[in-house]
Figure (cartoon, rainbow, N blue to C red):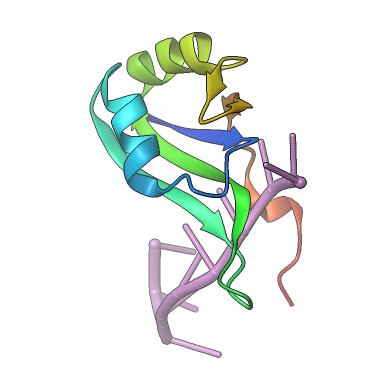
Length: 87
DNA sequence: GTTGAGCGTT
């Protein structure tokens, strides 16, 4: 089983490869993506990572509250995006 | 600078 992870407070220069590299150290990363504004193309400062539950739990404990690229990371389980309508 | 977007059906 895999878990969806939310990663916030990222630096503008952080990309999907950076996230994947970070989480890959704790387990097999299914997918990693940094969210950016699709209208402007600029980064939103947060991203999502999908990986195996065991690695995800370890990664959350290890990376949450730590400094990354000059910002303290916020790592958590991602909430379902059904919580907000998309028009 | 904080919880996506994609797909005409996951």
